[in-house]
Length: 106
Image (tube, rainbow, N blue to C red; front, side, top):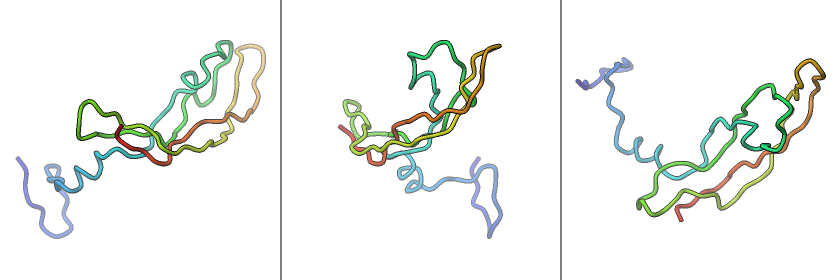
């Protein structure tokens, strides 16, 4: 059951206001974990450390099921990772990823 909290007390059953629910669910760039192999699928002989990276990508709800939350603006970000080939070599490399900076339901 939900309860109304008094003062600064927080409850396990705290109700999140509608405005917060709607705002957080809108189509917008949000941090997501992206598997490096999904971005660099052609490189099958190496492992990466870390195996995934945090990127801003479009996500959220659109007002119509026929619409999809898609990027309208992007930029590239370069990250340093370790490319590892078991029993052979390991070195730091730079990989470029696309981040979404603006989204729209289309």
